[in-house]
Image (cartoon, rainbow, N blue to C red; front, side):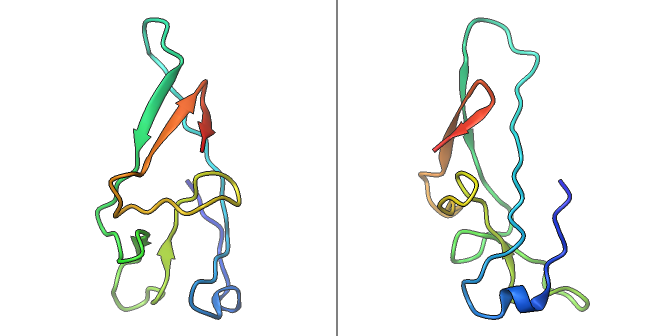
Length: 95
């Protein structure tokens, strides 16, 4: 997924967010009559706030992370929590 470029002025204070980008989870190749599934979001480089941490190296932005939301404009999904599973019904994310 291509994320938008975000200016430093959009992230001028701790806790600021910018560049929200929606995405769709689609299921294919399924058999049977089930119409729901659950998705568990996990990450390899999760920070203390439950967000995906940025690479720490020369040339990369510092003090920024990627935050997953449970819906457009919704609540953050804490990737450190064991309760970060979301139910998908007919390819629509349900909070």
